[in-house]
Image (tube, rainbow, N blue to C red):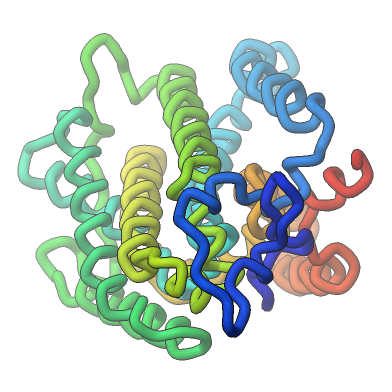
Length: 354
């Protein structure tokens, strides 16, 4: 699996990143990295980068109003679940696609956020304005602990260490018998918000849509900031970025913690969606599913996580209607995408539009 963009890492003036620091040359000042461009999205037409996402957002906003007219009320809850997983997959894409960090333990942060909601609910605290930020803080703190150790390694060692930490967290929550252990724990009611009833499918749907849209916008801003360009430079050539004077470990750690906190928020939303939490959310297979979503959607593309989550969950829902062995055709799909569309489904649209 490769986490590098197909397009070269160039400056706006045409200078290639690979040529910034060559043997025998002096480091270039930090300000020279302000113009890094890394993805095909930068050359895509405006209708692909602006109008299409806005159109999709408008359709999603209208869906709860239109669905009952066609007897599709059930799918309001389904689309909400897709949006939650889109947030989780996009948070992974932030570090995988833009930072080159193949973390096989991202579900630990996802599950930790969900468990914070369930555990605080069991203690009588259900205010979303309290519980959800705490879920993000706990997931972010867990990411800080894991990242501070694992980010000192590279390649397969990084993958294995993140996997090991995630499995440790998984077995930790299995051992918490007071919170259901392996069987999980039910929530008696969703979190509460002033002037909102999260038990109402439509109100909760719009809240999730707003949170996901705001989170995607925040990630987009970070990717296109000086921090994001430095992160992409590290993905391309960590040694040269270090030679330029960038604090490589700190930048990667900040990105890792940020992604972990967003995954924790997605977990908090999922706990309210399902009204049930179990350790299976943290299993390594859950992390693998998130990676597959990113691969299917497009690694390092702005909406890669969103497209991947939508494709995977829609196919899962469709195939389950016909066979209980739906994993087999899903595996075939993944092989086809890896072989014939290495940039993912979103990458296919970008390539055809440029």
